[in-house]
Amino acid sequence: MAAAVRAFAGYFFLVFVVRIVGRRPGKQMTPFEFVLIFFIGGLALTAIVGDEVSFTNALCQITTIGFAHYLLAWARSRSKRLARLVDGTPLILLEHKAWRSQTLRQMRISDDDVMASARDSGLKTLEQVDRAVLERNGEISISPMQTTP
Amino acid sequence: MAANPFSQPVEQSVSKVNNEVEVGEDLDFQRKWWRFENSVWVIFFVIIVLDVCGVFGRGPVAKAERRAADGTIDVRYERIERTESPSILKIRFGQSAIVDGKIKLYISESLVNGLGAQRVIPAPLESEVGKGGLTYTFLASKPPASVDLALQPSGPGLYDFTIGVVGAEPLHAKVFVVP
Image 1 (cartoon, helix red, strand yellow):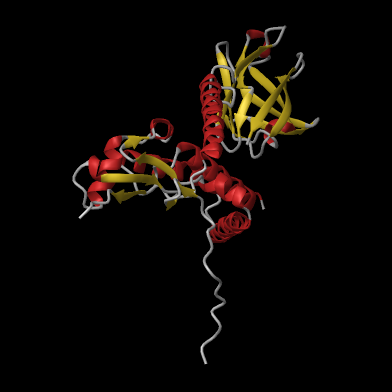
Image 2 (cartoon, chains in turn yellow, red):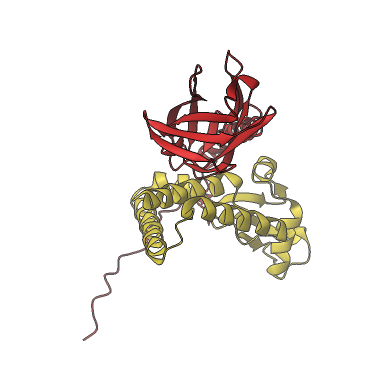
């Protein structure tokens, strides 16, 4: 029973920490952020599994985490308020040739990150970007400037 | 016949920016979240400082030492332990603890059950159960002489323990085991 409680608590604690650490561990993940994800995962595993290395324990903990995830996803789909708390909202980073400086600073995103996504969309300069939005999954979506024929 | 796909018309459910693009940005909420996030970073920093100091075990604050008034024993232990984490409780004996070339050491049951005493180093000559604990007998010549108890608490909680040389005033102490 204690193992299931540890798995349940560990899941929600990790969701909270990853939410606080920021949205960058998503599409914009760099090797530096890979370290964070693997390190957190490894440490959580040690604390949650402990010395109970049985197959039964693994099955019970995986089932518990699966249930916790289902519960959170279900609650999130029922409540927009909870969805905003868990995922945040999309955030505009650049609009009509102006940076949203507070958003960039708070989300710890640089112009290089935006330019990387712009290149991904086939754009060559930031001036060709009409709007850059940080999506809830960490991806930066780019709307190119409309060119008049 | 194809099954009913249960469709419903698309409605304007995501807020627009400048009446152009449906983004769904909520800056008021986001600013509140950033304030909360900043306060959580402060809490994280405080937790790290407390951890380094040993408030959650394994640091200077966690280390403790008790000495019997009659000088028979001196016990070094960790007043804050961690569940399932090994540690050493060190007992040093004074000259008055050695009687006829032997030391008889009493430890309460809580040291074995609650705090999970795994090993006694060196192995005692004799072990005797009773009086709510264990009495070990060691061969000894003259100080400095010491015995280590390897502990590994099995669960969180506050544990009292008693330790002392038989016939002398015992020491009482508390250990808090964090999860």
